[in-house]
Length: 231
Image: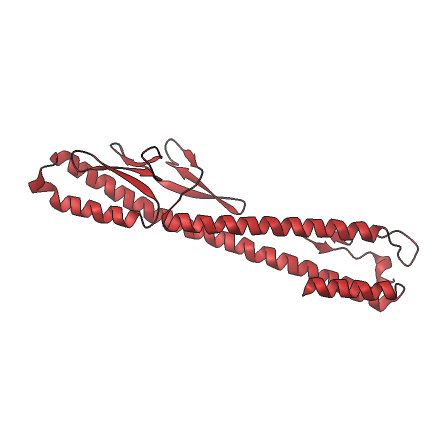
């Protein structure tokens, strides 16, 4: 592993601190370790981007379903619940609701006409996705590596803290784990860089000057002072 290689080179350097070739191998190992941190962060960042794309696509499908349910509601309301006229519409409604719950967890409340109100989440206290006025869409936006959710973005835009249930809820939950892993990696990298830089500053270069920072914590790049290269 890159971190084991780095500390191995540091041990070699401690044994022969004036050796130019050893100093070079330490810097190379430090650069490889920084590249490893950046690669891991890159993988997690790419995963977060893929999660956003997935959520965005699934919300588009969710919105298409709620829009279709709202259209059926209008037809059902206009027919007044007459069994001889609404049975086919009720079957269509049920199929659309069955598809909807595959994407998001909802609560369905039937009206007298057979039309339905649909609420996001596990109770009728949740945000309304479909009611007498029609359907309200859900949208996703990037917020760093996380996904910010909004209900009715082109109307009374309301932030949604989370979506549970269905494919969207599952993907968002996985996204939380990815964000947590990336935050932990960033803390590890920043702490490691600070610790190494502190130790490095206590040593002397070949000209007798105190060491400069080895790492830049912003992207874990490796700074190579001229004295450390032996020039």
